Image 1 (cartoon, helix red, strand yellow):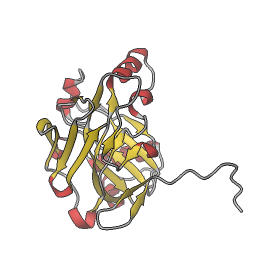
Image 2 (spheres, rainbow, N blue to C red; image 1 turned 90 degrees about the vertical axis):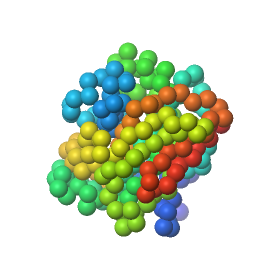
Image 3 (cartoon, rainbow, N blue to C red; image 1 turned 90 degrees about the horizontal axis):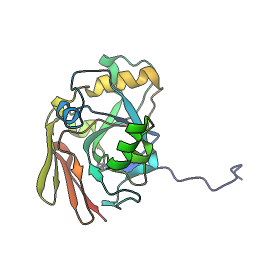
Length: 227
């Protein structure tokens, strides 16, 4: 008999392309990690120390639908490569960081931009703009054994067939091993952790009925419809 006083919440998981499911522990997101995106958001693209925010594990969504959220009229797409960890620790050296990577997935960091902007002006946290229900559509995980480590290659996003975002993974200001190492100085990373690695320039609004397609060649295409 369980000692829990309410029903146990379900475990959030992401399907693995080769079979099985990856249980999620935490979701870390890095901000302004492509120079061109930093510029379009009004910031200096120089290599300043990275900063992170978090989404909730159950914000991840694998249904292919994105319900337009309430209390906003300006929801933006942000195409991202996501890294998932099979192990972790504290103070992980950069040269050992990739040992902890299980695989990669395509994802979207959907953002209530108007609400995020209000929080920025007030000097308050961004969660109301970032960590809402189903705000992180994500595709299946492809393991390192299947696709290797993704250090370069085009990342694109189309809306209704029109190219909106385009960049290359080699344009990341903070590379994957650096992100893992830096995070591990402030948090104890562990198996099940998810890191969304940032978005290239070209972010913009979507409306109901739009179809968003994120592509990175070895990972195929993630197609999500705004409903």
